[in-house]
Structure formats: structure tokens, C-alpha cells
Length: 473
Image 1 (tube, rainbow, N blue to C red):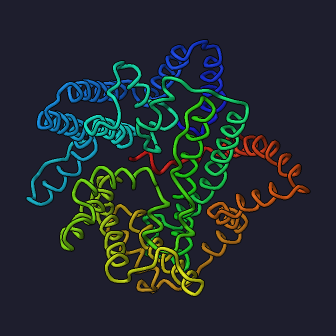
Image 2 (image 1 turned 90 degrees about the vertical axis):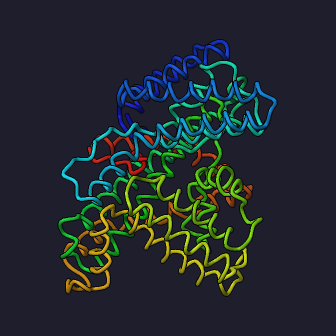
Image 3 (image 1 turned 135 degrees about the vertical axis):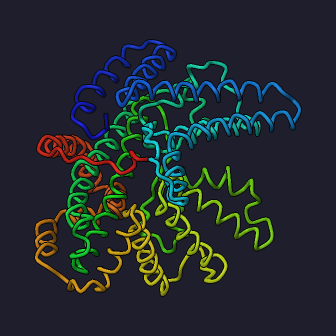
């Protein structure tokens, strides 16, 4: 079950929030949310729900033991045991096939790599639980004494399968006590509506363009402009798809009183690769910063060790995204440019008026190439696409397919580009500050979310094509 499905919107969400309203106490409301979340997660496979419950139980017991001991050595030891247990489950389900296939290929064995079903969202909830255990060890939060409340935190259907990666400290108080005002409910509904429209209308439309132009069996014959337009559409899809799910998660959380932190901040207007990663998938970047980079010593070490720390973080960031060499190379690709910016280019945090546009263009080129690495899990396909883009395959600069795709989808592409920029929020703020346009802004804010929901439902009803990139993580 996905957020952008008719069943989820018209049945599951309506029933869940409808029953939630009948909860009189916070405990009743939380139990309703927990049951709904477990049903939602079990929809993809009841057995996989048991894995979520097991991992939560491991962290529940581990945190209680860690808090019990006063000896730092014993606390650290139990923290390592608990974290390693979580990582072992993640590695088994996500990376066993990858390691086995590479071992078989390396030694030329006559064997088949095992095929293990990847539990949806395991990368997200594993990192959430790891952050909880480490924060208990650090004394930043108290261990949760009720298992079902920790399970609620780990399984909340708003963000369990696709993030953002929510830390227990951020919602600890709201699990016990939270309020929902009419204003919060309205903001939550509006945020959900925007996210749904970004996904159902824009991201799915861009996905159709990217799939048509970047089909593996036609890459060799694709024109240079076809590759460029295809990767451009995929870059739009990648942002709109993932940020839409974060929007919907944040919106649904607001509607029941949970305040999740922002996960995206218009990364495609960044003025450096460093700035890009401050804006893209913020919850993942901050996780690696706080639980890997800083514990390794961060930048408070020698230059070689600093470079090593960065390398480890970005190799792991790439590997987190998928059990494939292209993701590892994708992480290292970004490490190279981040290291160059930090140690060679030494960009100023805020660019000058003269350097802003060149730096933004440079960042977009780097991100474009990074998107190609992310797109093609086959390094052979990546090489063919790269060659085709620069005309190495004698395939010409343009062609009928790319011209028809562009002319048929030009309005979609323009709206998608605008959705990747802060133009709409900027105009909205201007209207709210002006006394003559405040009422117009209020009317738009009341009408547009409902219109977006209706248009999204029409788009979903008329099209069964509804991919979601980040389900593989």
C-alpha cells in the first residue's frame, strides 16, 4: 500500500483518522495509530511485520539494559551489541544477495545467489531505532518503558516506509501528549494535498518521460538530447517523488499532532554540492553526521583522517541507498566533490553576486551526472548512456522520439521545474504581507488543497502507472 493509491486515500486514511477521532484519551489514540500502522505495514507482507516488531524489541530491551548500568564500559558494550544486532538484520535482508553474487563472480563458482525479499522501509526504521539506542546511551533521552510505545514510534505509517528518518527525541513528548488545533489540521491537510499532487501528477508524469527515453534496450540508439532530457526528467522525478512522500508524511503527522522535521529544502537551487547535501534528504545527512562522522572525529582530526572520515560517510551513504556498485560509486562521486569544495575550492558559505550563478550551474552539472549514476544500476548501461550523451555511439544529437516527448510534455516539465524552486512559497509570503492580497491568499489557501486532491485522484484513477523510487530502500 502506498500513499498515492486510491485505496490508501479513500479507504485506509479515512477509516484510520475516522476511528482516531473516537479515541478519548491519548492512550486510546496511540493504540489506534499503532494498530493502523501495523496493518499498513503488514499489507506488504505479514511476516515482514514480525521483523519490525523483533527489531523494535531488540532495541527496547537493549536501551533498558544500557540505562540500567552506570559503568560506561558496560553501557558502551551493550550499545554496540544492540546496534550490531540491528545492522546484522539490515545486512542480511538487504545485502546478502549482493555479497553472495560478488563472491560467486569473483571466484567463478557455479552457484546462484540467494534471493531474499527486502522488507519495505527497513533502512529507514533500522536507522530510527539505532538513533534511539545511541541517544539513550548518550543520556540525551530516557529509555521508553513501554514496548508498545516504542513500536508506535518505529512503525508510524506516516514515515515508516519512506522517511523522513524521525528521531525519538523529536517526538518523545508528542507520543505522551499532543494537541491538534484547527490551524494544525488545516496545515497538515494542505501539506498532504501538495505532496499527493507532486507525486500523482508531476513525479509520475516525469517518470513516464524518463522511462521512455532511458529504456535499457534502447540506450545504444538514443540520441544525445534524448539522454539529456531523460536524465533531466528522472532528476525531476527523483526529487518530486521523494519530497512528495516527505510532504505527505509531514502533513499526516500534523493532522494527528506529530511535528516531523523538514526533509528537503529545494536542493536544486543550491550554490554548491555541500549546500545541496544540506538541503537534500536532510534526515539522512544529519544521521550520518551525528552518528558516524562526528564519532569518527569529524573535522577535529588531522587532514588525512578528516578525508578518511568523509570517505567513510559517503561510501556508507551510497551503500545505504542500495545493494549495487553504482550506489557505492554514487556515494564516492559526491565524496570527491565535497572534498574538493572543502580542501581545494574552499567555497565561501554564501556566494557573491558574481559567483552565485556559475556556482549554481556547476552544482546542477555535478548533480546531473550524479543522477545518471543513481539511475543506472548496471554500470554497463551507465557507460552506454554516458557515451550516447556525448555522441560516442554515432546516434545523432536529436531524434523524433525526444522531440515528441518534449513537445507533448513541455507544460508538465515547466510546472515540475517550478515545483522544485521556492517561487510559490515566496509569492505566497508576499501576498500574506500585503493587506490588499491577504484575503486572496486565504481564499487560495482554502480552495487549492481540495482542488489538488481532486486532480490527483483523477490522475490516479486514469493511470495505473504509479512507481515509487524509494521503496527499494
